[in-house]
Image 1: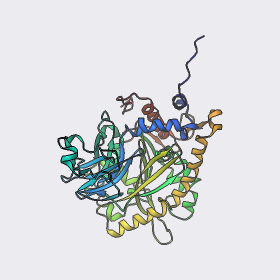
Image 2: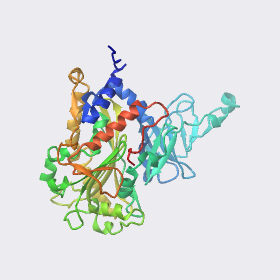
Image 3: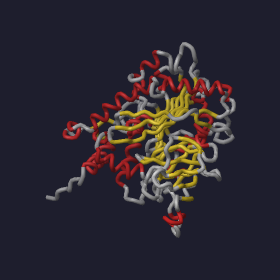
Image 4: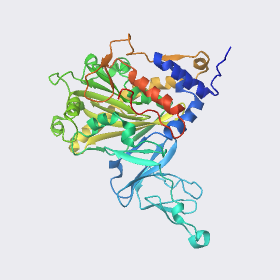
Amino acid sequence: MTQTTPPATAADRILAELAEGLPAGEIPATLYGNAELYQREKRNIFARCWVYLAHESEIAAKGDYVLRKIGEDYFVVVRDEDGGINVLFDACRHRGVQICRADAGNTSHFRCPYHGWTYDTKGNLVGAPLWKNAFGGMDKSKNGLVGAAKVESYHGLVFATLDASAPPLKEYLGGMAWYLDLVFGLNEHGVEVLGAPQRFVIDANWKSGADNFSGDDYHLGTLHKSVWEIGAFPVPFAANMMGYHIQASPGHSLSFSMAPDEDEPGPRFFGFPERLANSFTSDRISDHQLDVARRSRVFVGNVFPNFSILALPMTEDGSHYPPTAVLTVRTWQPISESKFEIWNWFLGYKNMTAEEKDRSYRAGLGTFSMGGAFEMDDTEPWITVARTGRSTAAEVLGMKLNYQMGMPGVGIAHPVSEWPGPGTVYWTRYEEGVQRNLFRFYHDMMTAEAGSWPALKFEDE
């Protein structure tokens, strides 16, 4: 009798269970807490995929820089003297010492505090103390800071990858680019960051954030019930669940709450003020994209692995201020298998008035921030998801999590064939195919050989 060789490691076993369970809508609970799996994620996912780092408006002037992370590693995102954007590993080439000592600033150079090696904003080594005696004859050009393998920007969103074999960013985004255009390209002015990013640490697994923002709308009526009770969100729960779940391309998913037609009462363009909405045209996007944005109440999505976007009308105080559009982007920054840091930015269109930007920012702080009503709701269950994921019981009992919503015969969601944008589309938002899409690509990245990439398009595209 032929016996199948069991997976060699715990990570291999969990990934095999994931591959076996996904067609049935089952996910191993240990996916959210295994330390060995996390170590592989750092190399197979964060060291390979395109990772969001900053918005161009944060480094508007020459010499502006911010300190950000890819996985657990720090990188300086800096605009050089020629206006280019560089992503430089924060480590001196002499002894590997950190060369950037502030979270943000403006400079003409970075100097290592250990031996004084000095680099310009392109990462070139430009000098060091006692150069002639210590290093005379050495080629400076071969001792600059190490840069990310590739850096690209999309609608001012700066991404980088450490993998030289990675596809171009637009190809990696695939169908998701159509939806990013729809949110960030509504007028010629584009968006800008409103203030520095918030940062706060959660004792949970980073994948809980990616899972949630891929389109977990089912929790809204229970976990966020109080948000409706205090009038923070203007759309009734039942109406809010009407909309679409979209697997834009492998790994990237999103959800729309959407009015069925233009005559339906309620907010338009995610709640942006009517004055601003009048500047939204199809000059930069298609008529189809403009129509989708016009009818949209909520957009929530995740670009694999850990970059999420949310646009919706909110208010921090319904008794004094009407809801207005909140546009937030965030990363789920891994620290360990059971700890991650949320980096949270608020954005606004550049042609918003100062008052409109202030209202949007304050509404965001009161709802989606470290002290916001939504944030405090979400993070509490994520902590226990991670606790379950690293438990002996979940491992020994082979616990599987149910991701079956929207599968044939389960719930009211059904596939939609007539939709103007790319991707696999379902109506309504009672559906979990968006999460299954996330974890299929996760599995494929975790098992891909170095230099090879999973398919970036669905088979029928």
